Length: 451
Image 1 (cartoon, rainbow, N blue to C red):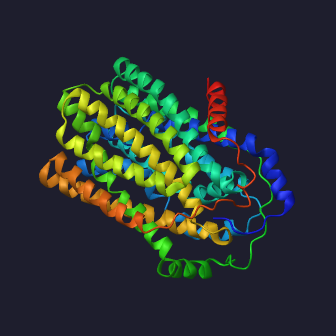
Image 2: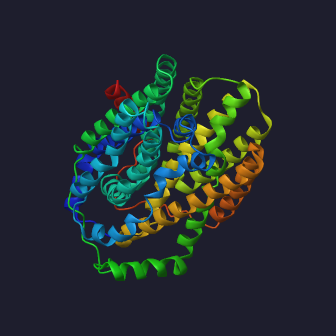
Image 3: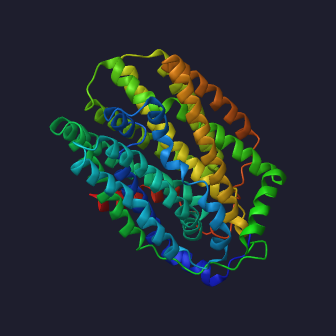
């Protein structure tokens, strides 16, 4: 939450470039995530690893692989980011390398799949890992850029539009995925998916360069100019700020969804006795769910704050897990993937919103680094649980019920968090126009541009 008084020149620049930046932020995220949809970590990448005879423990890690790298780099860069008046140049440098590994994996699938299976498997697995490591240097400056250019009571709708653009494009992606995997089964088809993904995420990089940034208002001496001092302050924050500690616990235990998600598509294909191309249909249904979930989450978050969005989607996750443990028909599985899309991407709207609102301006990058670190270290814990339980039982229902327990714990800690949203803030009080007209107008502009 931003409590400092901003200079008038800063206010005027935010107002002047608000619509432009809102639109570009929306498009950049939508195009980037559309690219990732072609190699979706929850559905497509696990099947790729299985195709190349990757072990079950590796399949369990795939949906979380990209997150591993995000946790550590922000700890060592937060103090620098807090001293920067402008963060865009720093962000662009690392963003390029964040996108490069998927292009390398595409080339490996095209040229080495026939004779170097283990090399190709390594490229597929390491691409999200190395992308996440580079992304770890990007995530805090990107969050700062969003916070600088978008008022807090319009951030939820911004994140929602990003996901809606991605979801609508993802529906088209589902058809393309099915067609490619039918026409080019195996490594060649997977290579085309990586190539399309690389093209789109580099297109998002070009859009990112067009965002207008302005000089960051000066912070007080609360920001630590030295790495060692800032690391010590981070350790103290976790124990002293009860609001932050509860938030770390709720986002960490939410990652229990990664206990069941690696095997969700694999279990569906097994129950329905369908070929790999059916994954495209599942992705399409998942994207439809994401559209519906994000329209609701964007409105809910702008009006009431990120906590309400997170609470709603945690309950939605519980419903889909219960349903997945019981329903094995094609219709039931379609509904499960619809709910998964709505809950997974809707929750990201709430998390992205509350990440910024719960972090005070003076030490925003430090708070965001702590949040990113605790979020990332919880992911391998649940991945290990997934691996151990699956190897011992080969029972998907057990994974689902362990996930439900983790989600209930997450809800308990979420209830302890105070909603940090102010009725007015230096960057939101002047933007009280009708939400629905604003939200739909910008969504239609983004979709028209995307076509």
